[in-house]
Length: 320
Ligand code: R5P
Image 1 (cartoon, helix red, strand yellow):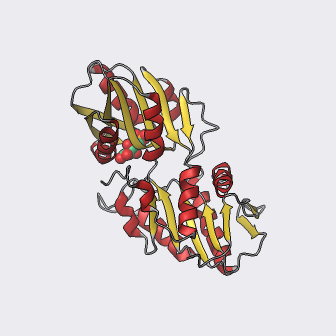
Image 2 (spheres, rainbow, N blue to C red):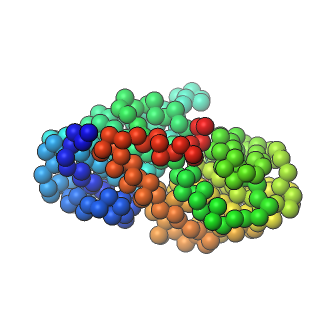
Image 3 (tube, protein in one colour):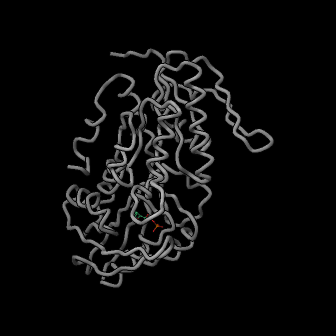
């Protein structure tokens, strides 16, 4: 059943190349829109085609400058709602503010919930996102969320690399589930780093649970922000006798000292990320960005045709 005949994809300014690749996958042109700035810095938007009754997808990721990009997404959704789009889906490859998902101390916001409320209030009817920092953030939305996993793309890549004598390392307790699923698919051991966060840019490794001596390690995380967590985990496995280290993360946020931290990390063979956040302006050596455009494009195609999205992940869902 196709309730909406027209499928249209628009993009904000955070990730236009990714949106264009999605459109190539779907065999449609990117929707024509002007997204610019007024002289005073306010965001200026004009959708340049008729969208009445259409099934519209708006692609915008939480890249720097994140606050501008969030507001741009909200205004794009508002524009489409007022232009009588039939259904509006926000496609958010990297959902920013996700790490503030609970009140873990007094007098702090739950930013992930507020951003979800803003997206719903703007008029989004559903959301597609990739590797949420915590899967329960889906519950912050009152509209359906299709949560996609980049692991499918990474696994194909690592299976092609066929790294010998490999083990998978979770760089902190929060990433155990993801890494356990990885280890299961690669038929190898899982090692866990017991990490403590000291501040936004500082972490401390307390323990290494498991044996990495003489092994090649794949360390996977949902994101690399300053690079502190994943570099500390690299140092810990190297100090415990690991050979080569492959770093892997879905969201290359690469903020603050990330470039310096990653380029200075010894023993790192490759840094494999997805293109949920653009990395063209980040001179990180050994970085390889794998495109998730086919994954997002396929999810859009299935949603448009009212087909199952979860069937895309029957083999690779880290929840199972
Ligand atoms: C933490 O819970 C996350 O999964 C990442 O490990 C962390 O946010 C990465 O940040 P950074 O690169 O600044 O250590």
